[in-house]
Every structure is written in structure tokens, then in C-alpha cells.
Image (cartoon, rainbow, N blue to C red; front, side, top):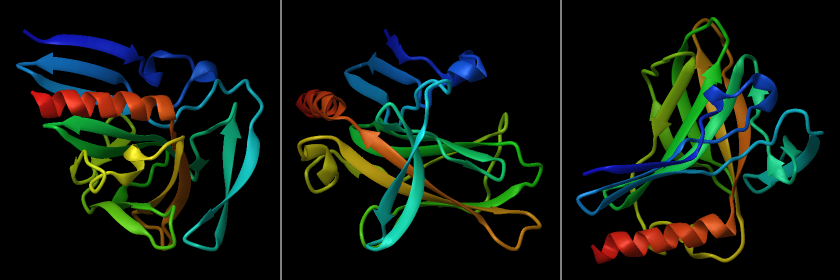
Length: 203
């Protein structure tokens, strides 16, 4: 028997003025296997005042990002809005997952997502044949073991701030669309995730 609990509603079910950025959080328990999607990036209602925060990426590069209520907002430029930066737990491993909405009439021909929090960019995924469904693209990175070596940030104290760089090449454009998207994983979520990882390991 499979039990499903929806903990966070999809933004598609909300009016635009009340849209919050995040993923549908779904916990599925089936034959002692756990599947969890955890929202990492939350954007408060658009009615709240946004502020600009400058972050340092790649060692010395400064990028401007939008925040509201102490959390980063989904970044939007040239018809692309990066509205998914999260993780999936599948088969006992963490799978980074990403997505964006697109209103541009030009077709994406290549998508690259990198972690640029540190001094060097770390490639997480490259999609050379992106598929757009309902004006949305999504893609997953390689699974990682839920260990201090596999996912170091999960085993640190405090909130974790990560900056992802989305590079989207559009048909007919000579220059790609580049978006720097901050993402915050709260300490409470990290604690919960470590507990879930312990249950998975035990079973």
C-alpha cells in the first residue's frame, strides 16, 4: 500500500499575485522505500517588497539577486524564470532537481546548470535536447550518496546558501540567457532530511 502526503502545494494552483516559489513536497512510503521532494527555494508573495542583495560567486564575481522576507526570489530575465532548485530523495540517494518557466517563443536548444557558490563552477547537469512541457523545463543532476562525503552541506550546521547558474541557449540567439539563482536550505529542513536518511539506511 502506498501512502502519499502533500506538504507543499504547487504554485500552479495559486493566482499569480500569491505565487510562492517552490516544489510540491511529496512523501511516499511504499515497501519501506521513501521518496521525498523538498522545496529549497521559497519566494514570498509578490505583494511583499523585494530587496536587492549582491552575492559573490566564483571567488570574485559580484551578482545582484532579489530577496523578500529573508529568502531569495525566483530570478527572471528574457522570458525565463528559474522556479525550481530542489532535491529529490530516490532509492536512498539525493538527486538535485532544477526547472524554469519560459514565455519566450524561441526554443531552448541547450540548458546547463552549475553550482557557482565556490571559487570554481561545478557542472550539475547539461541537457542538449531540452523538452518544454506546459511552458516548463525540468532536469535532474546525478544522484549522490547521503553521507558527509556525498553531500557535505547537509551535515553542516546553520542554513546553507547556494548559488546556481542557469545557462540557456535559445534557437536563433547568438548569446545565451544566463541567470544566477540563489537557493537557501534551512537548518530545520537539513535536520529532517538527515533523519529521513537514517530511516532509509536502517531499512
